[in-house]
Length: 508
Image (cartoon, rainbow, N blue to C red; front, side, top):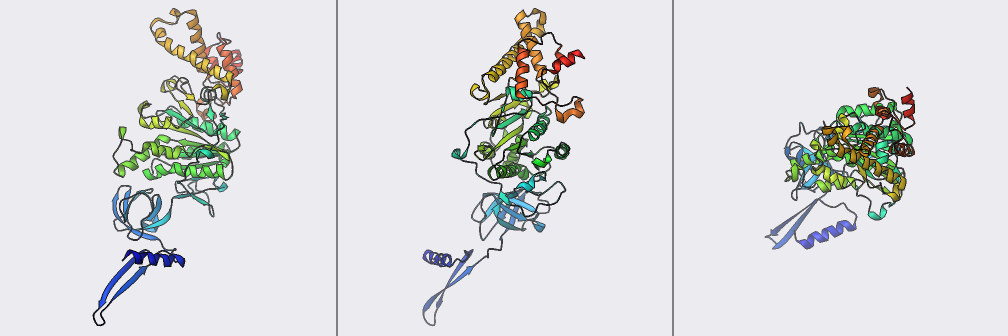
């Protein structure tokens, strides 16, 4: 068809508010009897109520290639296929003018070549609103707690742009947790991002559940727990524990567990952020977003990238590792309407902090809490390494001169003790100078005082949980640094709240 004819037809259709046609066909034929040439135009329409239909041409695991002869779906569009549309595919890339490649967010069992695929015309969406409080969802926003379905609820796309720099708040406020080691040495920022770094079995999930117990119970606001690629039993246990603690009514839970396809694990974090953004921007509430585990998000992205046939980068990660992580992390911030404060567990492969997943995650965090396997083996829980953990908030203009000096004195004392450990192991404590022996005495008591019994582990440890205010923690550490308890047995400072409990233990 000539270009001028196409332009004329499009103009006529647009002027009359007629739906855009999906295909033109132009036939020319010559009338030999009268010696005239005629043009025959056929315009094919698809009404707004009909779906854009394609067909599967290739299936490789979770990767599905679909041909759409009429109209090509946009990137991130949700496609439905299989019996009753139970297989959900998200468009990742457009291969040519008629073919898209997507990643399945559900199992593709039973799907075959030639199967019809319907383009929904929109990205994947999840419900938002107050009705979500106290409920558990999957990546599609479907209820998975065996409760009643949520009907007539607003739905929003999981793909949103982060707030611009002009829309963000520049004020820095402390976020108290009630956990001594965190509030003293690595304070959290309201609206900031904190990472719990550690290998397997050092207590990342336990620390997150304790934060839920302390923060949701003490602060006004909403808590949102996002489980990415973790154990399936943890979701059920956490749901039951939060219900018993009576904090579930202010909490939303969303899970994409390790038994689900990589596409679902890769998108569940975006779904959680869409829910959190509604509470922050529309309801103007502060949100505590807990993610367990951000490494599983990176791992799911690696699986998706490998299935898509992309060339891997360093250590086998996807070439888009930095941008994938930034797309998620940059949506977590403070605006004048409210704040999303995030605490993220970060599994460190083989305890190697130079791993690209850990390095890229570090760059987004305002607080880094490193869990030490050595401290865990010594029974010093929470196993927070005071020398490797740190926070951008720990500066005199923000936390105050007193807090800053106490934290620096604690770190200096523990660092000196680490240097003396080799001498003690070889020659014994008696060979140290009097000043060094006093340093070791202070350091060992500080190590034991920084342990704390948790409410969520009472049934395992037989120690009742403690919530310690920042002022009590500062006062207690000041007294230990002043050698007030140099003659008190070390065990008297182990697993207590504030320093006032020492005298009761000594008396017993």
